[in-house]
Length: 159
Image (cartoon, rainbow, N blue to C red; front, side):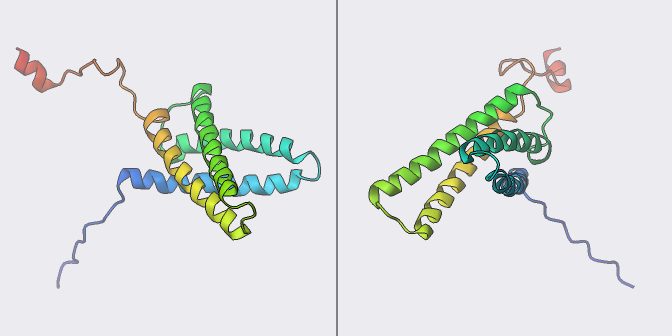
């Protein structure tokens, strides 16, 4: 009788795992937001509906990213404000990409428009992931960068 072979299990790098969770959470909220926007379209002006959906979906996505994507315990309006700023930067980036497209081509095809928009969204999303991971939900040191923690080794060396 032979013992079963033990194969080491491979786990994703923590940043890659967080990115996958980020895409799933953000994508899920994006799809749901799109559906809500369609439902609101006939009831209120599109610009108002889009503004409401953007604010609500950003709050929901920020909570999901905090709890699921980055597994952080950081909460509160400061986190939502920082996350909202990353959304604003992403919006400016994608809008800028489309404006550049229209400067180059006055009447691009729908395929070209979507290609530019989705490419810009992917780049903005990657940048947003990095900012959220490092700045918004990154681990904070209790006393700032100058506070050194005392370990048993450092205490023993000092004695």
